[in-house]
Amino acid sequence: MKLVHWPLMGEVLHLVDRGVDGAVSSTSVICKLLESIVRDHIMSYLLRSDLLSNQQYGFVHGRSTMLQLLHMLDDWTGLKI
Image 1 (tube, rainbow, N blue to C red):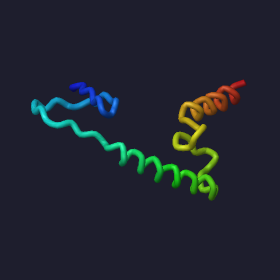
Image 2 (tube, rainbow, N blue to C red):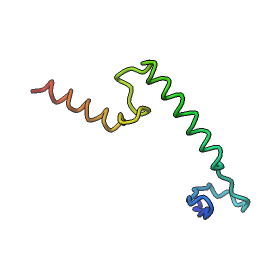
Image 3 (cartoon, rainbow, N blue to C red):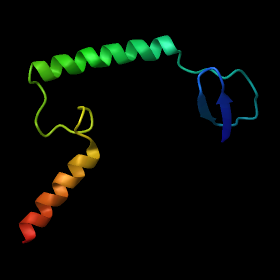
Image 4 (cartoon, helix red, strand yellow):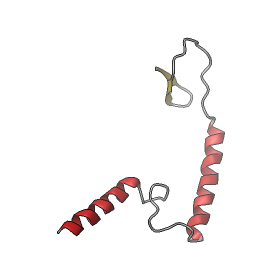
């Protein structure tokens, strides 16, 4: 594994060293921006249309997978009392 610092992007890329040194490519800033815009529009539609379950975690802002684990732990320990 090789670490390459990409100064223009401010990133450190992890590359598999296959014995060939070549150009390093990274997803362009424009692609990342467009992906973000599309994701935001899709999530806005899903939330506005109430198409996501209240049990959906991990892809909804403010509902991380860590929060899901904490809720499950509360449920499990609450049943034992």
